[in-house]
Image (tube, rainbow over the protein chains, first blue to last red):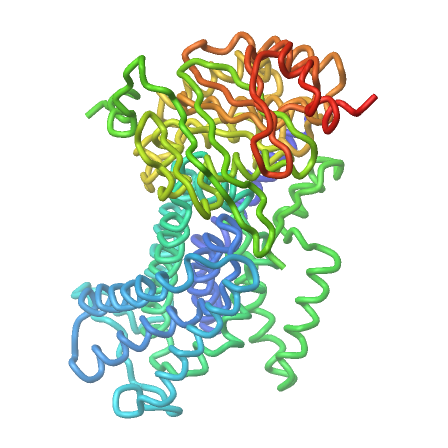
Amino acid sequence: MKDLLASKTRTIALSLAFLVLVLMPPFYSSYWITLLTQMLIYGILAMSLDILIGYTGLSSFGHAGFFGASAYVVAILSTRYKMGFVSCLVGGIGVATAISMIFGLLVAHATGVYFLIITLALGMVLWGLAFRWVTMTGGDNGISGIPRPDLGLPLSLKDPLTYYYMILVFFLVCLILMAIYVRSPFGHSLKGIRESESRMRVLGYHTWLHKYLSYVSAAAFGSVAGVLWAYFDGFISPYNMDLTASIEIILMVILGGPGTLVGPALGAGIIVFLKNFISAYTQRWLLILGTIYILTILYAPQGLVNLIRDWLKGGEKKTELKGIV
Amino acid sequence: MAKTETDEKKDCTLFVKDSVPCLVIENLSKDFGGLRAVDGVNLTIEQGERRVLMGPNGAGKTTLFNMISGVYPATEGRILFFQKDVSKLPPYRRAALGIARTYQITNLFPNLTVAENILMACQALSRTKFVMFRPVTSYHHLRDRCDQLLKEFDLWDKRNELVKNLSHGDQRQIEVAIALAGKPHLLLLDEPAAGLSSAETHALTLLLKRLDPKITILLIEHDMDVAFEFAEKITVLYQGKFLAEGTKEEIRNNPTVQEIYLGAE
């Protein structure tokens, strides 16, 4: 009966998502389409961080760095060198992934608070680079005027609705790839590291390598979001990759439910919406962010998706996740 | 290309001759700062032997296990596994050679199900553990091994339960099950019966006696009944040093052992 209820809820949730994301957008105002596009891009970013936080049990405070790095690569390649979409996409993902391969060597031996501090420091290095390497990045002013890509299709991506549907395709592809990834033998090994790294080592896992690959794949998926964001906003500045940006992504993951992929995407939607909605009334966005964080930790430390899941199960079994907050 | 399990284990398995001892420990020591936890221990264990390691708290038994399994590097001395010096190898390489262990304090994956715990151990030594874009449940040789272990250890009915929701006795069973999943040559059991009721202890002893006689087993055990029932030969450590070795009678009648371990009359 409970299972039936759960599968019924799942069907309802899926149909609702299909309705809101696929069928209805042509009838939305351009404000809502833009907002939905932002939600999906940040959804990809939050899901990619979930690989680290929810599945591997490592909280990274520098994830926005990879988002920013790929966005800057797109900005530089498309404005200065007039490169096309595919080159920018490959370049953005390639550079951000390459950076994560170097950073990974430094972070993969750490866990817990040490991991958090090292990733924070490395995230700040990328932010500092964007801020100070003025000749390349434009410093504080950032880079503006990134043109929407021309895919040679009869449809123009300058149209918000067309661009929205392109992002939706990217989002779904990333969601499916990540969903398979976390259910793969490798994804299974990451859950083992989250639960007990010492046990994994004596079972025969080279846990350093697994954590390294987890870090790199999270960065690779996150950099997809960076590429899409650069084209979406047409503008990139150091503020897209500072510490606050990294913390916002963590909040998306924790609010939605770590270790669920869909949860962080939902969390991203809520945070992006609130940010847009609240900033129309007040400048004190960070204050609201902090309040949401505290409320989540107090009342839904396992995240919204797990909260709903427990509630459907009848609340007798609480989902617990360790090593996240 | 279908890979069999033996193919995957080939490069991990040592060439095993019958005459060679399974494990030789030469003059092994471990310092923690100023404290010498293990002090010049020598030990030889033949293939297929069952050996019990005894000693009061702080004797260095678990430290010795940690050194054999590679968790701690040895300060001095060598560990030879089938004549191969493994002293400098990291834990995962030693596991690949066939050294498995359990923990005195249960060390499992609490938020995963029983089946997922066993599966984690089954795929540990297979190369498929690096596959990223194919579901783990699609590997039939892993699932078959997993199902076999679940049935062997009488955990089949509980396979979809989260490990943290199981009783202590069931968790101790899983400790042993996941150590056996990789078909080890040497099994290090660190007080497998810790915290079990006498009925559960009895069941566990029966289970251990049923294990493949080719597996060499080194067992740390405080419970005399289990120890004496399980092994022909017993080694006693005391304050990090080797104290005595012999059959149960020899150990029982050894005056020093009686004094420090069994309690002086």
